[in-house]
Image (cartoon, rainbow, N blue to C red; front, side, top):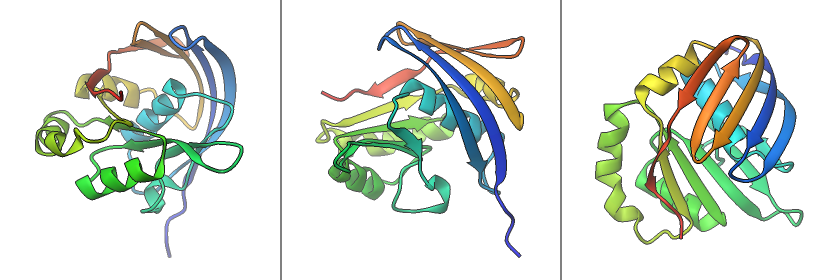
Length: 181
């Protein structure tokens, strides 16, 4: 019998001074049996970094043809495609063809750096692609904050991120490996 997803309830308050976005989202997040707490927290952080009223989690890890997070226009077009981890060159190419904007959030330390070295030359033609990496130290600290019921406050200013969960604060400095044009 297949294991079922674990449900997490998240109250996510986003104060994004860079985009002038201030909103609270009550999220129900399904954690796939194969998903780690680190990946779950990176997924929630990625949601916060792109927060919008039309942004939503997709089937993600349980589906090969969907991103982890997406935003569709009112007419059903894909405005934003957010993928976590280290996708293949083929998936990057297909994603960039399907959506107006694609963001890949990488994590995993040296493995992520090696992935980028291997794939970066093949991504230069994609003007709608951003690639951002989180340090292993940052995501490891974030992972420690995971619980089935969370209240997160995410503050974003000048590209720097402060995540507070209860009385703990995690500072995250994303590194942009590739920016869209």
